[in-house]
Image 1 (cartoon, rainbow, N blue to C red):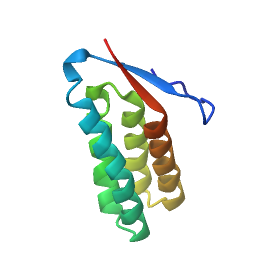
Image 2 (image 1 turned 30 degrees about the vertical axis):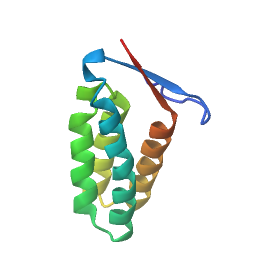
Image 3 (image 1 turned 180 degrees about the vertical axis):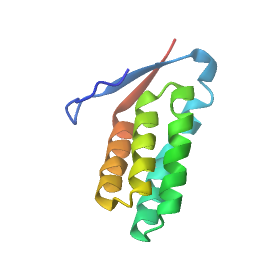
Image 4 (image 1 turned 90 degrees about the horizontal axis):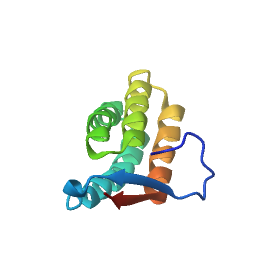
Length: 107
């Protein structure tokens, strides 16, 4: 799974059940769209949207085999509750970075 402090250029490999092969690409595409939605929400100070998306990622990530998305979502939800804009931005960057570097291997 995900290592805690990889180099920024390292690829991340996540093993996912072959049963999810048709829906994982859709899930990841939707998280990429979430990055844009989160940036827009943060610029508008719409912390409710940030909190809701963080909560959803926290719940959905692990079910698809992406524990790191769950971790980021939980942290983002907490940061939104605390109205911590700089921490939210850090988590958006972490999510974007993860999505750029993740490689899925179906087993």
